[in-house]
Length: 139
Ligand SMILES: [Zn+2]
Image 1 (cartoon, rainbow, N blue to C red):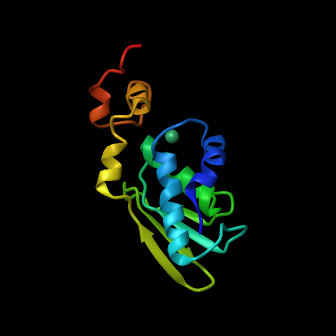
Image 2 (cartoon, rainbow, N blue to C red; image 1 turned 90 degrees about the vertical axis):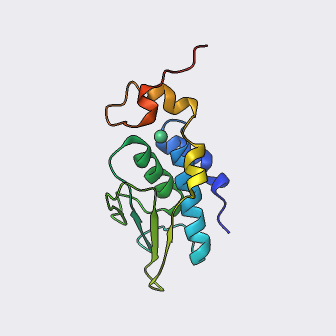
C-alpha cells in the first residue's frame, strides 16, 4: 500500500515550495497505484497521463505524480494531455491495466483560499482565476 505521506518530504524537495497541488498529485498517484496494486516505477513499468494545462497549480500537480509514481519526463513515461484538469490516468504496462483518478470537487475547493495561492497571485504570469484579484493577508 502506497502512502502519500511517505513521499511528502521528497516531493517538497523535488518541487521546491509548499503548495496544495503537489500533495494532491501525491494523493492522486497513490490512489492510482493502490488501485492497480503496483510499486513505484524504477524504469518504464508505468505510464502516467496527466490531464493538466499550463497554469501553475496544474504543473505542481504533475510534480506530485512524478514523485510518487516514478513516472518522469526524463524517462519519458509521463505525458501532459493539456485538458486543463487535475486528472491522472496511470497505466501498468505489464498487465495492460489502467485507472483514472480525479480529485473530488470538495478537495479542489479546499485548496483555493490557501495563503500560498493568495501570495503568488500577483507574481505568477500564468496564474489566472479568482485569486488574482485578491490581496494577500497582511502580517
Ligand atoms: Zn507548487
